[in-house]
Amino acid sequence: MYLQLENVFPNNNSQDLSWLEVYNGEVVSTKMMKDLLEVADVKLFDTTPAFQYQGFRFRLTQNDSSIFPENRPDKVWRAKHGNQGLLDKHFSQLLDKGSIDFFLNQMTSILIKHCKQLGYYKDKKIVI
Image 1 (cartoon, one colour):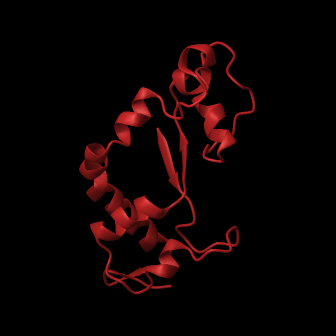
Image 2 (cartoon, one colour):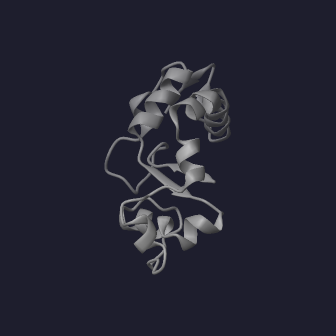
């Protein structure tokens, strides 16, 4: 399963301020990561066959929320699941609040690692 947060780092693809530009100079914390998860645009992808064949990937593409867009609509499962479902059972469990809280420290450390690699992280502060 892949979860991609959009507009975290400064880029030319968005006219909005990136998340790092908003928090410039603040101490990195799990609270910042929670804030990011609440406000960032998210794109998803799952390698399970259900995500592809039951139409979840196609429906996420319609909302510009699929990492790898899919233009082929599902023809069989739509009659059974309806048109409203966006997440299969795996993603819905992962995005449950308890699961997010469980993985929050790991996600924060990965964000810090990427900030360090890109030169945005100095002395526990994000500097643009």
